[in-house]
Structure formats: structure tokens, C-alpha cells
Amino acid sequence: MGVSGCGKSTIASMLAHRLNWTFEEGDWFHPPSNVEKMHGGVPLTDEDRWPWLHGIAAWIDATRRVGNHGTVACSALKRAYRDILVGNRPDVRVVYLKGGRDLIARRLAARDGHFMPPSLLDSQFATLEEPQSDEHPIVVSIVRHPREIVAEIVKRLGKGAAPSSPGIAAAR
Image (cartoon, one colour):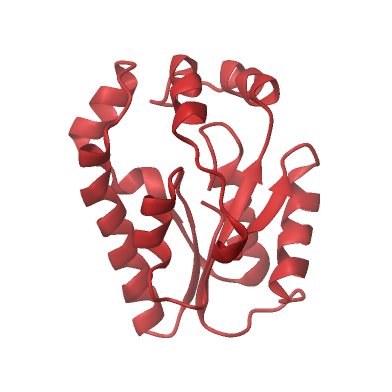
């Protein structure tokens, strides 16, 4: 989880590859109306996000139901959003990719072809509710190289380099 441009897709994909898990891009769950709003520079409302979040939660449940493991890249900026995604799933972990506004703004400026414009970064930070200790998040700085970030997440998950128990690691 984290604001746009923090590296969610890169890290979640790399983590899934490292652990031989399934990767899903949370953006793929957005209905076209949400993509159009973001592309037009209009921040999403909670009402826009509820169906999207429930779609991701359904993917998490389906993945767990068949005994698979996965990562999903999802902003999950508010506690209420994470409550939908984690819910009563004790094996689902939140990974918070934490970074400063200036670093993320530079990354967004260098990104090409994404529907989320850099102009919405301030609204992302305004919406962000950092995960609290009772959520048991894995908090990692985005300053380091993606390989180092993934290695830190794997270590904190207690997974070593091999796949293990069912669950979803959410580098959301």
C-alpha cells in the first residue's frame, strides 16, 4: 500500500516472483469510470472506491480458498479500505511503502503512460492514513533499491527465499 508512485506495482510484482506467488495489479480492478476520473485529474471518492476494494477482497478470498498465495498492489490509503482488504483474514499482511512527497513527485514526473497524473499526488497524501501498530503492517522505506526492499519484506514476512504458508502479502 501507499500513495501513487511509491512503487507498489514494482515491489508487489518482484515479491510475488521471489516467493513464486501470484501477482495482481489493484488498478486492474477499477471500473472504467474510476480510470476516467483519475485520468481527468479528479480524485476518487469513497463511493468510487468501495466496489473496487470489494473486488480486490474477492480476489484475495478466491486466492486463499484454493490454497494459493499472492500479492496485490493497491493504494489502500485509509484504514477503512484496509479493513475491507484484510478483514478477518489473519494471514493477510499490509506492506506500507513509505516515502516522502518530493521523492514520489520526482518518480511520478518520470513515469509515462499511467492514468494517475502527478497533479493528484497531494490528494493522495491528504487521504493517506498511515497504518497503525494494531494493523501489524510491514513498513519499509522506498529510498532503497527495489531488490533491497523486497529482501526486507521477505525477511519481515519470515519467508526466506521459498514459498510457504497460504496467504496474501499485500504490497498495496
